[in-house]
Image (cartoon, rainbow, N blue to C red):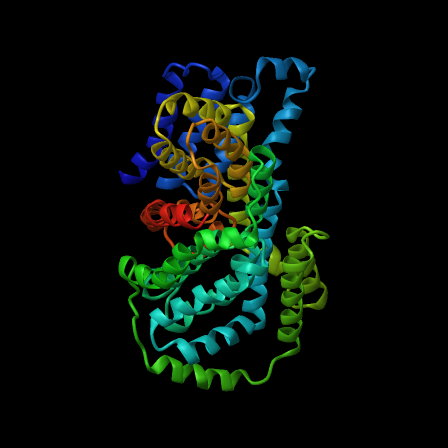
Length: 483
């Protein structure tokens, strides 16, 4: 019965929206696109079918009905009878997204760690020194991300490609398995701490998230304000420190692990390390390849796309025998996440393509007319943050919404433009926690098998609300004082 309701509700939401009148100022085809998108999001939340199936179904429906759901009459006229071809190009556009391929590479990195047992070795080392208490393991994960964040302008590369392959080896040491009731013993807690930590550090440092740099360029071009690395860091510093220091403990209370302390496991880990012996040839090769990718992600982003660096390492692992081709083709979580996230990127980009996002921006401008500057600032930051539910990419969110929100804010008399800009740009990292598709590493941790759909959405709502409230209650007054 519950499955039938979950299967029926997304369809019902879509049909209800389709039969509602099109809002004023919005094209009918754009409203119909949003109806299908909303149904898909409800399907992802309830998950009557795997997420990849939900996303693919929505893309196919829109592609088949592109004449009514995707393209304007002017676009159809210009297509010159090539509407099917245009529809297909749109349908597969998400599969060319660089973040999608970087996520896929991260899964392959994890496969390399697992096959060579290098991930197990690193996990045993962590457990040996910090594994007596689950809470200390949580802090170790958070601070590991913090150390890498200033130098890695891709949180997918940092958390998904570097930390996740190590973290994924920790739960089995405690008898915690994915897609199993034992996941809550420790695996669920560690995965949640990891994804939350990378969202925090992505807001803490200008150089920790690629869209941060894009946001700065947009602020400079549209508003004429230059935000330095130091200004950004200082603006978010008190909130960043507070969140990092309390995150593992907060997750410990709100999503408690079953295993809280075990003095025997560290001793067992020490004996297991002795059994592993010296590093094998394949472990050394893997370590070299991973370090190579990390160096590319930190220092060579101007010369090589992070996703290409990840794929280069995958090729090197295949050529050196660290991985076999069967390891690639047989990695079901990787392919499932690849299809799921690619279709979401396509759907979210479509919202902007049909003009729905631009219409939302104009509507916001009309609603905020005559509101005092402080209330307007709070309302715009709140809207900018919550509208991330519509995006499967922080880059897409920044590109589509930031110019519109900046234009609205700057037009309000008396608003502190510098502080307003800082609130918007520093929210880009922390908003990634609200959905399992909100930022690059999210699908990786969601696909780990340790974070069930209901848990992810519930925790995303709780932590997302905490982050937003603290940004406005602590970050806003602090920025007013120091900027």
